[in-house]
Amino acid sequence: MWYEILPSVAIISVCMSLPNFLSKYLNLAVDGKPYRRDMIKPWNLDTLMRDERLTGNPYKTVGLEGIPDESQQQ
Image 1 (cartoon, rainbow, N blue to C red):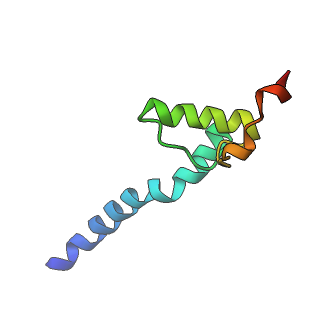
Image 2 (tube, rainbow, N blue to C red):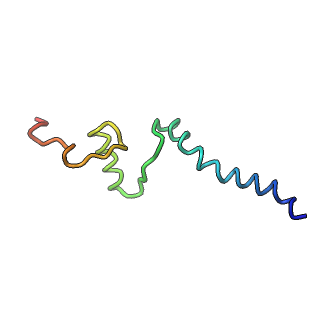
Image 3 (cartoon, helix red, strand yellow):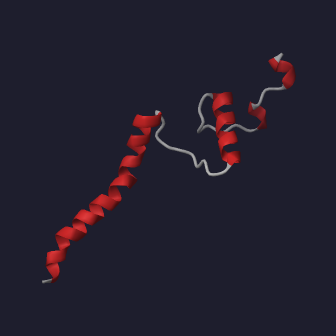
């Protein structure tokens, strides 16, 4: 009958939805950060490293006011 397929559908649905719910906790356990940035383009990696260097937090973006002047660094 048609209802015999329901357990298989339930198992497949659970297995396909687990990564969506577990990715935050797995990234937190592995990287120490709950979310990852997209690192496909080199510009994205550069901005991530810049934000982490300036604020200590790669997920807090800063504008021009957060970048110190050259005279302040010397």
